[in-house]
Image (cartoon, rainbow, N blue to C red; front, side):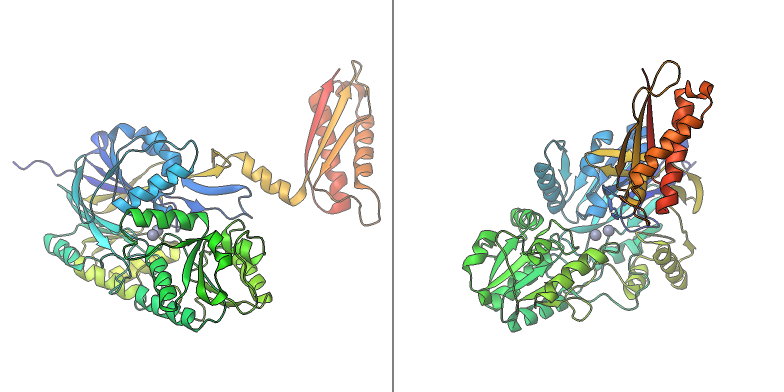
Length: 556
Ligand SMILES: [Zn+2]
Ligand SMILES: [Zn+2]
């Protein structure tokens, strides 16, 4: 008699319904004896308005922590922050073996070294295209073209079937660095039989094919060649192929490349260590910039997202110690603006233009291209792999539903749309069978806080409407033993008629206190609550907004 087939399940704990914070788990075995494989552990970036003071959003891994004993390992597809950015913060809670290819491992180590107090993290380095086992899972890497070296899809083979987890990919026939997407291996998987494809949906709304990195390199070379003054290029530092394109463009125009910004320095270093800078002579550091004639320099800068402390923003504000730009110079934005950063990026671009600097963006020139597959590429992959089941991931709702519709049109029998926390059974047949806990954590300063913690909501409220703090000293018989002490924070000084708001608040405190019956005055909580209401009402009457208010009542 054949052994009963083992159940294979999949659950996204991040990255579905959003672009960012990728974390997927695969489980093998029945519910009571399931072994897990995790893929990626990424972050999302917070928007300053909604989450003031929050730097990063991380997946809530309470489920994995609870299942830690059964978690065989974590495999990283590539070194983009949305796939590996949460490791330094979250790995200590899991302490599972990590598997990564050389560039990803080296970048993780460089990141760790630059963060004081970051934990030692042992990583098993696996070769490109390698095959290895993680617990009961047989994992094989498939090289995929993307916008960073060493992006890998995973073929996860189990007794219940083989899954293709695509990671981030595109079909680029002429990438600048690294091998092309491994079509042969993907077709072979199609022949072998693919139970499920779990795939990147980022560009599922875009027709056709994503242009090649080589086309971008050509445009950049033309612009650098034609430029008269200095040239600065900003891009995502991790796109080493793009850095190579800029370096080649500079060399062709007999210019030297100056590297500006810490993230850029770090990547150049890691790319050298891992063999991705072969044939590139030494690049110059920022302090060499001032000695080079304007027509002999290309500055490769961080700051493509308008980050205020990054190189390009400081250059635009004329606050960079080494690098300046002026009328007649050219800045190339070789990057997409991540949604949420439009305002910051716009501020830098407009600031540069107002100084007479020419700014070239991907809106008018092919100076950037996405690393994700458009519809014709998604169709091609489905044709190669012929999955029985397709699960769209790595996208917002619109991307996921377009990817699902495309897969159905391509004849995929079972297309399952899921959300973070859904537990999908892949075999014997596909269905959402359960839910597992998931959610978000915020990196707030050096701490991780729960997304529903009051701190961030309080901070947002503070930023709209300020705060009043009141201190009252109560005597034994319920009398005020001193004048109330008041502090107003972030509240206008005067109302429309010129009256001092501080005074109005003071009067409201006294009047409210005096109007309380003697018995209630003896109760500090009752006093605090009455005063709090009165203060908020008094400010609202004069300002139209209700501040936060804290009342401290001291019984003396
Ligand atoms: Zn990526
Ligand atoms: Zn990604």
